[in-house]
Image 1: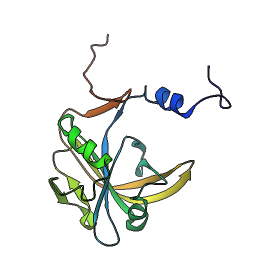
Image 2 (image 1 turned 120 degrees about the vertical axis):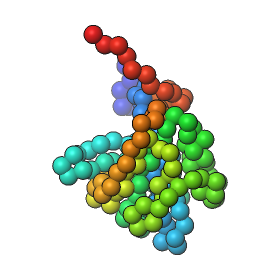
Image 3 (image 1 turned 90 degrees about the vertical axis):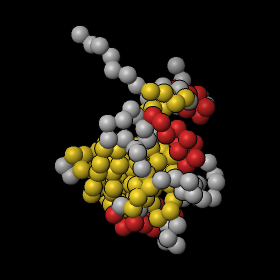
Length: 166
């Protein structure tokens, strides 16, 4: 068993990677009007009344200023067929939206086409936590489709399938 004084960050990351998550692209608009998006698997529902969701961004992310400035964001939950988008928005390329199909949501924020779900949010709270910023967002609009969801576990893209449980 690893204790706080003796574990390595790489070992902790590997242990945390055993928890399967969905894959999202979180989008916003910078103060200059540039579309911004990042891949994140740190998405969770927090509350239904009022509707609040959470995601986190590393403090050193070049996209941090845009998310802080805009005060709004969209969580785009990726479909199984959208691994290319996950990789694209995780990369440092300058214009991540150049080949991406999207429509405009509230305040002109990008809603990526063909996602499993999208949640248009107003930033409710911003919390510094370790090396990340937690963004809690009040859901102002949402949509969902019946597509298989892209998942991530143990450092790999995966898909889920229903289990027959007695």
